[in-house]
Length: 68
Image (cartoon, rainbow, N blue to C red; front, side, top):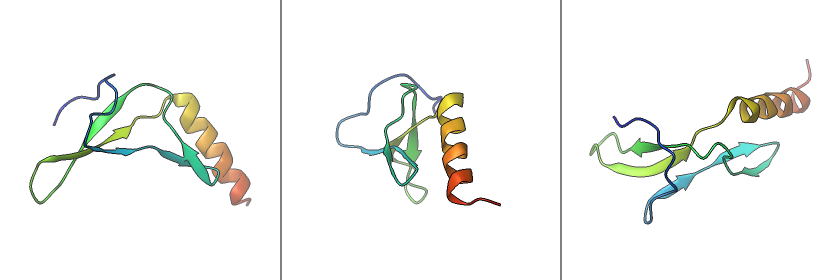
C-alpha cells in the first residue's frame, strides 16, 4: 500500500471527496490516498484525506444533525 501523498487526483480514477452537513465537501488538506479494488488489487480511485479541522467540522455537523 502506498503512503498518502499531496498529488492532485489522477486522471481516469474515481475521486472520492467528503460528505459533510448534507453536501459534498472537497478535501482541503491537499492530501490523497489510493483506493484499491480488493478483488484485483488495482488502484480504482483516490480519496481525499481530511485535516484535523475538517474532521472537527464533520463531527460538529453530525452532532447538530443527531442531537442527544
